[in-house]
Image (tube, rainbow, N blue to C red; front, side, top):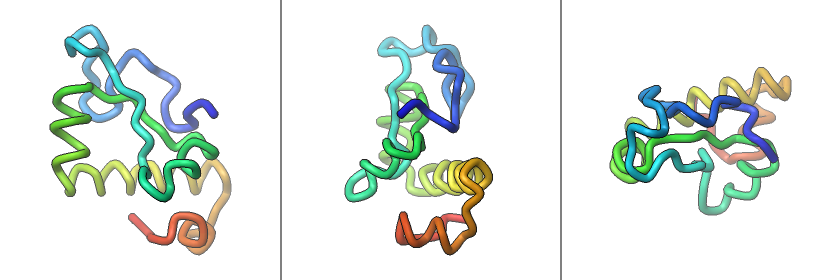
Amino acid sequence: MKSIVQEDKDHCFICGRHKSADYWGLDEHHVWGAGCRRLSERYGLKIYICHESCHLGGVHKNEELNRQVQARVQAIAMKHYKWSQEDFIRLFRKNYL
């Protein structure tokens, strides 16, 4: 499914840089990976972020940044799908807000 979070695939969701500013461009990042990756895909909970700084050196290395992104995307998903926090927790097993 396409992202419900970010329509603009040309700018990094985190830092706002244009995709041409990173040698590798932007990566599609599933906000919840591992056991919840399929849910992220199903509900369009993915973002586009700079490969080097915001992806590899960012959300995958910096737990605080990752939690900030997850909280922001949780709020977007709850509004989009009209979910309560309990609905979100039932699906993703945790509240990030």
